[in-house]
Length: 350
Ligand SMILES: *Cc1c(COP(=O)(O)O)cnc(C)c1O
Image 1 (cartoon, helix red, strand yellow):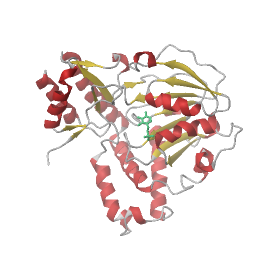
Image 2 (cartoon, helix red, strand yellow; image 1 turned 90 degrees about the horizontal axis):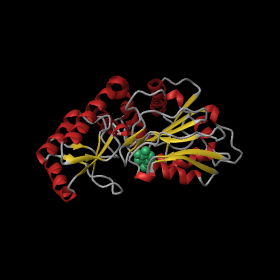
Image 3 (cartoon, helix red, strand yellow; image 1 turned 60 degrees about the vertical axis):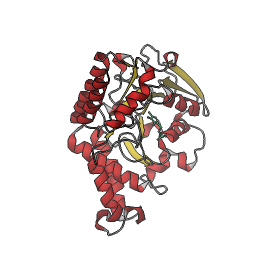
Image 4 (cartoon, protein in one colour; image 1 turned 90 degrees about the vertical axis):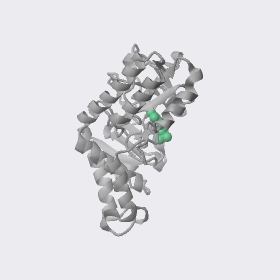
């Protein structure tokens, strides 16, 4: 079969090595002769998987033992409410940069006052707000590092003394960051880490224990931490594949991954900017290295362009329904030749 160029926004492309290791574990997990789907999560072999998957995140991000790494169920969307459940006493600050931010705002509103200190909703989220004042009397500030649907990305994070919470679902481990500036980082696995079903959550322990409400066990970070992410049965197979991706990231190096991501994005954005048939959807300085959004100047040609992509084995390029046009998601595992294939179609199309 010819290579399919997978630009899907999520679930999305994974390193081939991670998929191969997952296949092997489906029939013979850690030489047990059993499938990973049919062994206890309390088995020595599986506990080793969970321990390594947690430790590797700390290593990749240079985090000390003030931080705890968890793998939970429920996707990033459950973190929208867990963050507020565990941290919001009276007031929280949010920066609204897209659909996912606004969903997190809605959930937080169930727990206390939400101060939306900046929003780019006025221009359909085509930029990242920059001029805003961060109050000092809030319980935390929540941001979204990469806006998967709109194709914008924070290239600089806000500086604040408040606990900083970040939804990194669609750009996690795509670039070098100072992870120590954050107090909570979370990501649904299915965009850049692994299969849907596992959610990575990293918490700096000292932000917990400050709310007065009672927290149900499954919503309580402290409980999940104290049980090493095994309070209930973890998403065992997804975590296994996440571990394989983390090993691939560790072996490759985040700096190399970042450089590759830049090369891919530069190639595509350069074509968008020089090809008169296309136009970028987002303010240039805020463009995402992960999800590039663009439009045809003549949108009556949209179907024809999608057909041309399909003929070139390019998959997942249709834009989100709320933006229209096209979106090329270029997660870590996507190779440069896939972007080149897309650029070739754009050139022919012109
Ligand atoms: C996809 C996505 C989500 C939602 O993730 P689920 O795991 O489906 O809940 C949240 N935030 C961002 C930035 C996303 O890209």
